[in-house]
Length: 271
Image: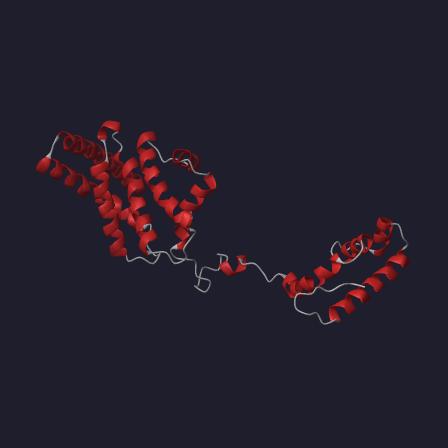
């Protein structure tokens, strides 16, 4: 019962804040000079807790908490001055994207730990402005496709710009975490066993070019496709015993060619 009463109180307080904000913004719109400034300042004071809540969601990413609060507060002032109450009375649908945009812009300028491509950084600023504009026009948060259409950009680029927040403070590989949470190390890739044979592959490749078509087919099927000698024999029209002898001869020639010294600018030839 206590939780229900608190939730009801919060909803009533939110409704009053919204209605009072709309009233003050309309008065500011109809006023000028010191009167307009007074009404706008009242809107800022009324909605300052919202700005601080948004700033709180960006904490722990390498920027001081006080700086985040200040950036969010300045963003609120910008939102109040830019909001047009004749286009709609839901101030927060416009203000929240604007505040987030100011915070992201601050991170873009001062908080990158890992810098994404410049195209993503530049797109992020455009996405932030489009998000605020579309939120007031639509009366809701726009989705990625709507933002991309509005800006004339691809959906993947817009999505990358929206997800670039993680570049501000990468996840630590060593920080302790709950036993129920998977460590980032567990999601890292393992060593590719093909790395060990990279040098050998690069050395052998020019020699394979010098083989005949049937010989290249035999080598490719045996060592790249892992086919049996019987399967190779069926494919090239010889017996399994002949495949064995052919492979032995090819490998001997390749080995000899690899052991021969090569002058600069020359290429090895398989005899």
